[in-house]
Amino acid sequence: MTTKIEGVVTTNPELSYTSEGQATNFFLIKTNPDTIFIQVYNQLAEVSQKYIQKGCKIRVEGPLTTRNNKLFVTAKKIYFLGKEKEI
Image (cartoon, rainbow, N blue to C red; front, side, top):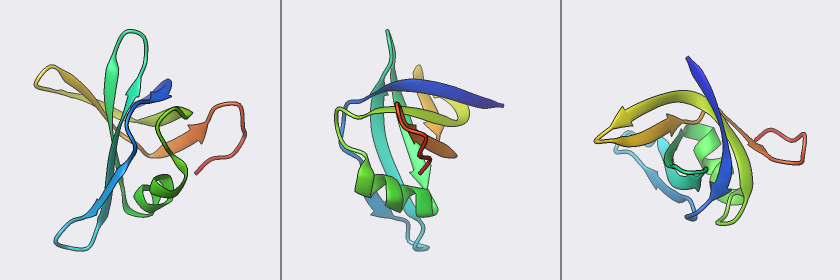
């Protein structure tokens, strides 16, 4: 099931690569009242690293999971709010 979450980015994305060379990215967004951990992979991870920064308002779409009482979304699509542009 795909979840749509809107919020403000509270940490700058952290781009890294797996031992297999897969790009991965991680950042947090704040929604009222929750903080959501966002995971991004492959080309979307590299593109989001370039354009997303702390303070951006975005919408993230992807599956929602819970681990250790924390919410995680694996982003499949990311939108800047107020723009039609999908990254």
